[in-house]
Length: 133
Image (cartoon, rainbow, N blue to C red):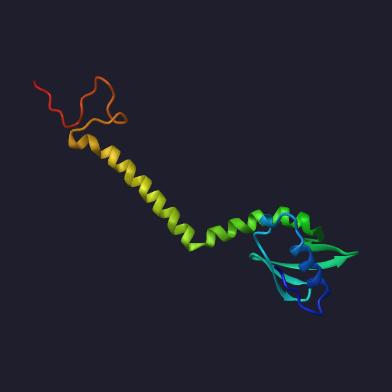
């Protein structure tokens, strides 16, 4: 739930929009108020105004409706946050290491005398097999 600043009409309208938004799962990045009309949205600082009860957000030289803004900028901000999340990076690194270790076990098994379908094809001798001359 978003609680607005009392004497800020823009913040009140933004709170009303957020608190009544039907697709709450789409609101994964929240607006953090800095000053009247100035908010932080993920890593992006945005300027918001209300025109005829519609929330518009300054983008480049013009404005987008809040719905257009959320559709366009939420995926990029989520990606930025995922890249900065050290726990996510750590868990991904562990998963990669486990995958690599798993491959190494399969690849090194022929050296122990066992055959592997990925390294030995039918008719080919294992590297540990010595040929009689």
